[in-house]
Length: 409
Image (cartoon, rainbow, N blue to C red; front, side, top):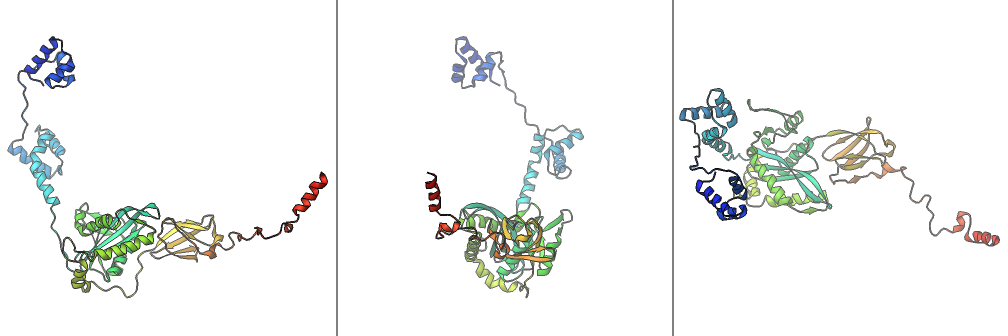
C-alpha cells in the first residue's frame, strides 16, 4: 500500500497531463501500480502492519511436545492438533515456536561419531554405477567397492548388473584379494541381501542365499541403518573415489581393459597416503591387519549360480546378460536351461549338458564353439565357381552362342 503523499503526487502529475509511463518513471513505481491508483485507489494515511503472532510460553511448550510425539516432526500436524484443543495458531506461528527444537533434532541426526574398528574386524561393501565408454559405446557398469575398515585397503570389481549373484561374487573376490576373511561384513539394505527389517526391534532378516554364503565363509553379516549411509561411510567414500578418480571420463577398449585398469588403480590407491589415517593403507595392512584376518578356505567355495530358461534362436545362440553363447544347432527354437556362475555358462537340454562356455563380460559379445555350428551352413566353397575354372565346364562356351547368333543372321 502506498503512502498518502505518493498518491497525491501521482494525482497531481496526472492532472498536469502526465502519462502513466512518465509518472511511474518519475516516482519509481510500477506502471500498473500507477494505473490502479489513478482508477480510484485511495492512499492510506498510516500503513498498519500486523505484528507477527507468537504463542505464549505454555502453548509453545505444548506445541514442542506435540512436535516431538504425535506430530512426528510435522508443524502442519501440530497446528491441526492445537486447533482440536481450541488453540488457533497458523502453521507459520507453529513453525516459529518449534524452530529451535527442529534445529536440535537435525543437529543430533547429522552429527556423526567416527567409529574405528580393530584390525581384521570389519569389511564394508557397497555398489555404485556409472556410464562408461567401452569399445566406442556407453555402457552402464555396476561396480562393487569393498574397503577394510581398519587399513582402508580398497577392492573394486565391475559387473554388467547388480544382482544377488554379483554381490556374493564381489564379496568372495574381495576376500581373495585381501588374502583373508574379516569377522564381519557391513553392507547396504539392498533387496539382494536384506529380506526384511524391523526398525523398532532393530532386527534384520537377510536373504537365505546370503545367510548360506556367510555361513560358508564364516563371516557375520551386518546391515547399516536405513537412510544413514554414513554408517558405512568408508565404502561410501570409496564408491565416490572410484567414480571420480578411477573411472572419471576414461575410455576403454573392452571390458577386460576396464578390469585391468581397475586392478592397477586399486594397487596405486593402496599405496597413497590416506586422508583420514594419514598413513599408507598397504603399510597399515601389512603391519596390523594381515595377520588379523582369518585364513581363506582350503577349497574354493561356490559364490552363486543362476538358472535361466532360454529359447535357442534361429542362429543357434542364446542371450545372457547381453552376451550370446552358441549351442548345438539341432536345438534351434527349442528350450534349454543355462546355469550361470561367476566363471562359466553351462547349458542343459533336459538332463544333458549340451554346451559349456567360459563366461564373458564383454557387452554384446559372441562366444562360439565351432562344433555347435557344424552342418548348420553349407561350406563356403560349395556352389561357388572358381575364377580359374573354364567356362566350358558350365556346358556351353561363348563360341557356341556366337555360332547360333551368326547362323541366325
